[in-house]
Image 1 (cartoon, rainbow over the protein chains, first blue to last red):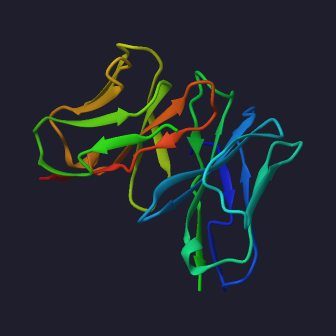
Image 2: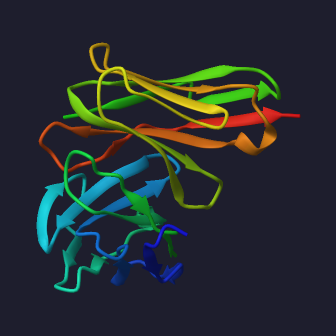
Length: 114
Length: 111
């Protein structure tokens, strides 16, 4: 167990809907990363927050947004869902940003859009 | 933009054999990671390599980093079936918080 908790584990929803994925980082970790893993695209970096601030952005669609709250948990919001958004979404956390950063991954949320 | 390339992408090998997975990255990276993922599971951190010439070993796995060649290797010694998994390398661009992953190497070890 990495100590990173993601909920829900599974989510099935219809196209056009909006969902929220939640991530609780390891105790004491300030940095949270979000990744999307699909068969054809591999592990895609979406966005990273450090202590409540957005620090790095990857290939995140405009329909997706995220935030990190004062208690350091993070949420990834996916809206106007399309079939192609079906994927495994991982959250990872690390103690620091940049060098010496080891990131620990949660169990993931499997999103299925039907 | 940092790009990370692994090869091979798929590897089938016999138990007891040795093999190496290669990870090349395109621009300067100040940290290199190796992760393992079992099917349908999360990613488990194996190694973090921070400096040129760094070598780390855990059991039958050994990782090394050559920053001049922009190359990291994951060497498997005397493979056993339990090592069957997908192995990812990932890099962190200089002065950037991103961690960028390669496509992964699916390792299948035959008994």
